[in-house]
Length: 278
Ligand code: DGL
Image 1 (cartoon, rainbow, N blue to C red):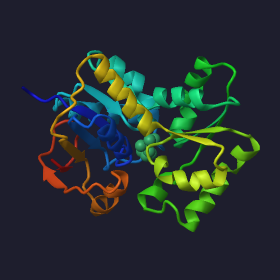
Image 2: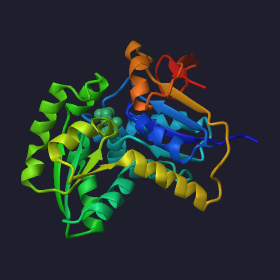
Image 3: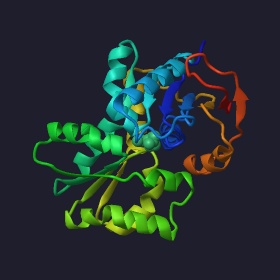
């Protein structure tokens, strides 16, 4: 019998935070991941380009016949999620937006919710619209934090520079008296400590990676297609296997050791080599 994996894509390596959680919640499932490292970041690109890339990423994952596709990238979830659902009507796409919103609404006491993400995510207004349509009385305070992604990619998750940048970005939230902050970007869970230090313990940080993994499990269990005991196989594909990749991946997979191998190039993704780990 062919094993149908869970497909996951992201603009780069950040979506591995979601992979790591899916492995925790669905330990029997096989996962195929595509990270578009050749074209990251998506967070500063236009909606049309983000949609086009997301279609190509989906086509690449379709070769593995996934049982569903998780859009781990918040930028792609906001700008291309509905577009992908229309373009591939037979496929199930779960994205990171709804689970984050549900969690934020469940934990907020004051209804004052902060939202941080890439410029494309924040400017799309997608989170804000969905939050208000779910609950009209919440107050949303949104802020794009473009420097957080390169900080994490550089591995600077808790040094003095990341602390200073976090303070500059997040200080307004203190005045706005939020009690919940949605981390609407794949990279931000790695900055939880620094963010928590700026905002204090009373502000609940909503980490979508955990929420979406739980939703994947519920989805599979509901349809009786959750594999409890599998080979735990995981394949990671990247559109550019640059030298930095090997050193940075373990942080996203919580230290899990991996080896990267090059694989044949898929027709639709449009570029040179891919890396894979089996
Ligand atoms: N994966 C993106 C997100 O979650 C962050 C990196 C990028 O800008 O592509 O929004």
